[in-house]
Amino acid sequence: MSWLWTTEDMIAVMAGRPFGTPPEGITGISIDSRSITPGEAFFAIKGDRVDGHDYASMATANGASLLVVSEARLPAMGRLTVPMIVVEDVLAALGRLGLASRERSQAQIIAVTGSVGKTTTKEMLRHVLAPSGKVHASVASFNNHWGVPLTLARMPEDTDYGVFEVGMNHPGEIRPLVGMIRPDVAIITTIAPAHLGNFKNIKEIAAAKAEIFEGLEPGGHVVLNRDNDQFNFLDRTAQSLGIEHIHSFGQHAKAEFRLAEFNGSDENSTLWLTIGGETLEVALGAPGRHIAENALAALGVVRIVGADMQKAIEALATLRPEKGRGKRHRLLIGGGSFTLIDESYNANPASMRAAIALLAASEPTGRGRRIAVLGDMLEMGEYAQKVHTDLAVPLLAAGIEHVWLAGAEMAGLKESLPESVHVEYRENTDELTDYVLNSVAPGDVLMVKSSLGIGFGKIVAALLDKFPAFADTQREF
Ligand SMILES: Nc1ncnc2c1ncn2[C@@H]1O[C@H](COP(=O)(O)OP(=O)(O)OP(=O)(O)O)[C@@H](O)[C@H]1O
Ligand SMILES: [Mg+2]
Image 1 (cartoon, rainbow, N blue to C red):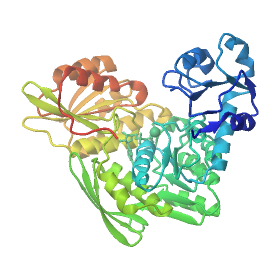
Image 2: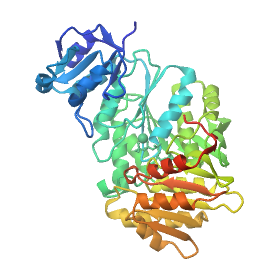
Image 3: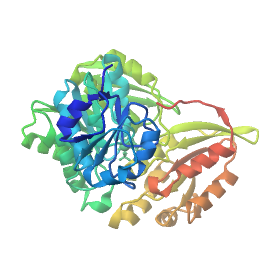
C-alpha cells in the first residue's frame, strides 16, 4: 500500500497528539464530510461558512479513517471512536503538512494566477502535461488560504508536475500562498478589473498579482501576457526581483510564445503558434480567442518544463469548454432547436467581453437571434456603474441586438443602450428566468453570464430542465 502520508509522518510534521490507535497511513485528505472516501483523513477546518468539527461524525460515517481536530474542540468529539490527531489549530496543521509535501516533492511546480482564466489554464495544464508524467492539480478553484495548503498536502510524493491555482481578493493574499507553493514556473494569465472594489486601481491589482514572483524558486521562470496593458509593469517588477527567466505569450510581435493566427468557429478553433522558433498548428476543441490565449500560455509552460509538445498539442484537440465557462448545449424547442452558451460561472468586465465575443462568433439559424442574457458583476466598488454601462461598447461593436438583463447594476446598462437594441430588463434573477423560459425561440443563440453571487446558473438549470437536449455536442473536461 502506498500511503499519501503515514500517520507517523503526519504526527511529526503537524506536532500533533495521537488519540486512539491511528491507522498506519491515509490514502487521501478531505475537508468535506460529504465527499470523503474511506481511508482518507478528515481535517476539521473552519471553511468559508461552516466549522468542520460540526461534521466530524458525518465524516466518520462516510469512512474517514482518521480525524484531525483541534485541542479546543476535542471534548465535543467525545462519542466518536475513530482515531484522531489532535493539534492546536487544524488549518495551521494542514499548512505544515503542505510545506512538508513541497519539501519532499521532486515535481516541477507551476503556479497560475491572474484576474481571469486561472482555472481554465490550470485545467489545460493538467490536460497537456498528463501524457508526459504524473500530474497533480488543484480541484475546481481551490486557490485560497485553505485551498492552497489542501492541494499541497494532497500531492502524492511521486508527482511529476504540480499545478496550483492561486487567487486573491485583496492585496497581500498571494504572498503567503506562493511562499508555500514555491513554484518553478509562475504564470500571470492577465490583469483585468476583477474585485476592483477592493483596490484603488488596476495598477494595484497588478502589484498584488506580482506578489507571485516573490515565492519563485531560485532560477525559476515567469510567464506573462505580452498583450496586457500591465505587461511592462510586471516585467519590470520581475526584473527588479532578479528573476532571469521572463517569458511572454500573446499576439504581440515580441511575444516569445506567439499566437500568429487564430481561426475560430462556433465550436472549436485552429491556432498557428510560434514557440521556440517552431511554427505549430494547434486544433483546440473549444471556441474563443481567450481560450486560445490560455492554451498558448499552457503550451509555453510545456516548453519551459521540457514536456512532450506533440502530445500536449494532441491533448488540446480533445479539450472541451467546462460547465459555466462556455459549455454549449443544443436544446429542442417547438420543432427546432436553440443554442445555449453557459457562461454562468462568474463575470467581470474581461470575461464579459470574452463571452460577448463568443456570442458574436455564433451563428443563429433561420429567424434566430443572438441574445445576451446578462446579470450584475459584483465587487466593483465605486467603479460599478461605469463597468456596467461600458458593456454597451462591446455589445454594439459585436452587433448584438437582443439584450436581456437583470440586477440593480444592469439597469445602468439598459439606459446606455440605444433604441436599436431590443432590451428586456427584470429586477431579479427569478423574474428574468421566467421571461427567458417563455421567450427563447427556435434558431436563437443565448449566452448567459453574471457574477457567481447573482446566480444565473439558475437560468441555465431552468433551461436545461425545460428543454430536452438535441445532442450533447460538447463534453466537459
Ligand atoms: N484569458 C481570458 N480572458 C478573458 N476571459 C477569460 C479568459 N480565460 C477565461 N475567461 C473567462 O472567464 C471566466 C472565468 O474563467 P476561469 O474560471 O478560468 O477564471 P478564474 O480566474 O479561475 O476565476 P475565479 O477567480 O473565479 O477562480 C469564464 O467565463 C471564462 O470563459
Ligand atoms: Mg478559478
